[in-house]
Length: 174
Image 1 (cartoon, rainbow, N blue to C red):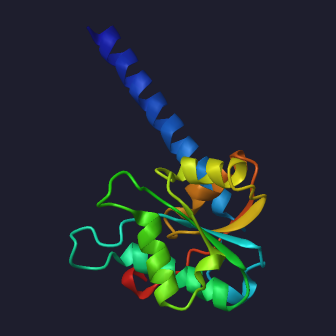
Image 2: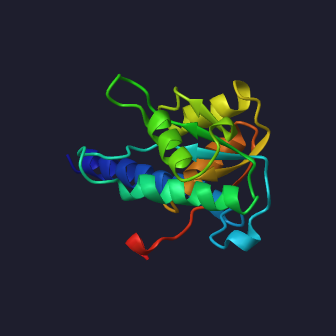
């Protein structure tokens, strides 16, 4: 019995060490590739905005959605990007992240012909893969939150994108 407990503990500890190590490896992809100061952001032609619900309860605006849209607007207005690819979930007629993102951006003055919608960005992986293979993006600025940016950068680089991120730190969680 002691034998089984000892080796079970060894396996559990080994799995935990591997999991922590892999997480740290992914998080390290954010080093030197995330810019919170707009003046330091290297201009790219495309800003890839990752999707999120505009209103999870149908009443309040999702702070993550608003932050991503405001970051996209800042990048566009500053000339850091010329075009926005908004990528998100469109799994039902009542849920359409790309449409909601486009509508918000257009209402804020971004010309609709400078926005492309990707209706099949169900996950970060899908958005990065489709950005590269369907939309022909070679390099871009990914627009998401700070906690999500390292993962997006990791996936983007593994898909062959020259990618940086603008995860603006907003007052909601400063």
